[in-house]
Image (cartoon, rainbow over all chains, first blue to last red):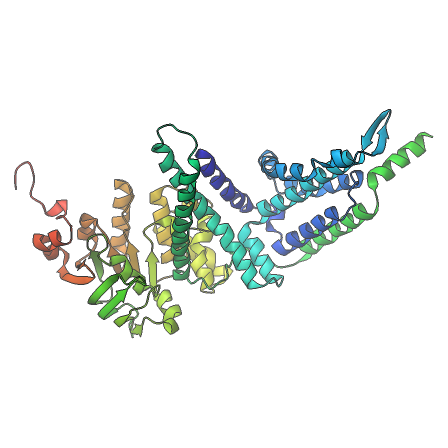
Length: 270
Length: 249
């Protein structure tokens, strides 16, 4: 059951990354949040057969990872971990949409394969951007930013506690699962009956733990608002970051740069 | 009004399922005293500690912290005056880094960012954890976690320090460090513990709780010298007071 403990460490690792000191880390969280939201909206707004126009958008996650000095390999693994969801969403497209959409030499590519590729690319762009935002900002600062942007407090507190209790839930699940494994006499599966029992107990234990965590927070003056030590204000760097990327996203959205580039090159060759 | 005095008169409390936890607790803890709260498992120690921080309210009787009755309308002042260190540091530490965790309470008190660094680092230095400032709390050893959780409470400059089983899960060296640290504090200290040797070293006074009632209250040495009281509460004399098993002296 080391896997659960590993996952717990990984959740915490994103917060550790967010404690970095690069220029991007220091940027006001609102600027990063709004720019990333705009990026996601731009990426998902394309038609289902679009692939080439999405490629320039790769610049944004690459820039964030490079400037934030984030461990690309680790984040790619996280993206791959959730990729089965995207694969399941698009895997039937090649069978349902078999009309040939484009030809590469004598080889015809069906619309289904193109839309499948588009789904995978969009998934990669949006998930990696969200992960990078988390690794550059941290959950607490994102919540503080949401609050300052006028998102209702009830929603933000829910999000905060969801993140906080994820640790409690994983820690409890890990210790229960280890206790079961040690007394299971080498049998791997736990069977439906035992699984249900463990799940019920896990819920009760987690609620109990959550209660203790909440009490500890109250004792240190918690009033439904997590304040973060490092919260900057909107200044020149933030305006520059938001403005430059918004302009680029608009260009990427309305001008198919790879096609334009291809046409320019072939035009030159003619 | 002194913020450092804790006074309970005829305190009673039962859990919602009807289980009585505190039957009749009367005590007065003076400014700067270090008091050990001992008793068997389920005696009511933790329930009493929860009353001190306003996490529970008395069903009958009164409890006053620094002259203020523990009630909803005084919760902010009471939680400002009482610093609680929980039994399990993992329940207490939740921010991404040690520094941010120690700063959590201060930020809630509205301390400015300019003052934050000095105050937080001061508290971390007091508990010998300044070098851990950028570490994530979940990666620390049990002793380090305990030190950081104490720093997170100390930084708020409470008048009264309440601790629940502070030596549990600590290795002997970390336990020793904690004892030396607690001896330097001038706060009013109320410490629930099963570690009677620890209580003997740190606390001048001991209150024994048995089935929700105070069965003994006096100087620690005297209380621990009464074997009958200790046996009633499933406790054993601390090693420091026992006769030498080799020579009987």
